[in-house]
Image (cartoon, rainbow, N blue to C red; front, side):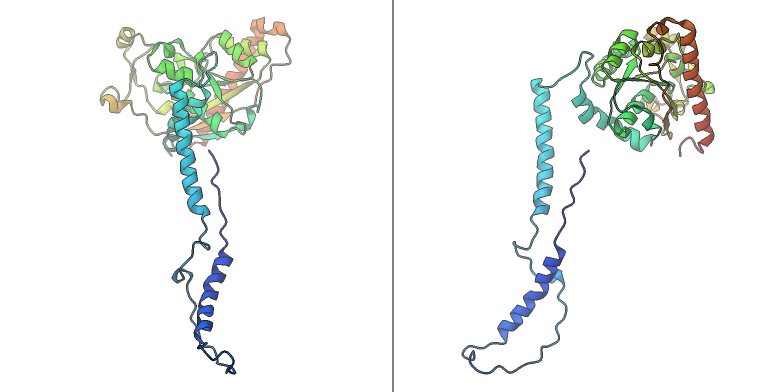
Amino acid sequence: MADAKVIPFDDDRSRGSAVQRPQRRRSAGNRRPGTESAPVREVQPLPTRAVPQDDVPVTSEEQPPERSRDGDGGLERRIAGGLAFLRRRLTGDYEVDDFGYDEELTDQVLMSLLRPLYEKYFRVEVKGIENIPSEGGALIVANHSGTLPMDGLMMQVAVHDNHPAGRHLRLLAADLVFMLPVVNELARKLGHTLACAEDAARLLEQGELVGVMPEGFKGLGKPFADRYKLQRFGRGGFVSTALRSGTPIVPCSIVGAEEIYPMIGNAKTVARLLGFPYFPITPTFPWLGPLGAVPLPTKWTIQFGEPIPTDGYPPEAAEDPMLMFNLTDQVREQIQHTLYKLLVQRRSVFF
């Protein structure tokens, strides 16, 4: 977002002109024709009242033209930028990477759509953003919850809007995301890709920030009674990927997402018919229809922990199952401990 330009106004010059103009008019009124050579008798000046600046007409020379020009110019620039953006979209004059990521569309449109939800609805508070490196690859590992994957999107906005370098987070998503119409295209444009070791390794080698949520559907669709209890972190594939690329692992703890859709039941038969891993039943869904799909306005906190380096291990360390198990357990424990700490500090779910 561009900073607003503050234009200084010459108040002293305008104020001086406002005071001098009445004096000039009074001097001209004291002379009469044909009396230029006659001695001039001194007349005590009459007391004058202060003339407010608003009472004095301002000429075009004194009116600062920069205000109108800047306002119109700013609007014109925005309109021109929007038209140029539309022209590029219509003519195909834009770039996407090998994964379908569209940086221009993400920055100008998709992030703008997610930002009100991030700032006004969930009021996300971000901590530890300095733990994310300013350049080079890094693997951000976070807990997963909330019935719908809103936490991944909010984490993506948090990194982009709060990191000093304005970095983009590339999320690894489940296969189901890329099987749904519309959602598939939007996920690709946002920079998401399949949660597989090959894609993650390519992104890390390119120096990208990669986000992964190892709990998967086990964490996303867990009952409300098990909130903030981390599920199993798979087989440690994300650790193996980080070891191969020598990139640090940044643990991330998200508080607030568990309560947006309190899942009190799971209609497994309906889930099997629809091909979903679960079909949530909440206090409002499906009883209220589409209105029940509106998330509760909980207050969120996203904290990024201290990075765990992996560049000190030899190349064959990625094949050591004991090392992968230890590092996976270390990341999981750090996330769980931070979750408990944030929950103790939280005073209210909604405020």
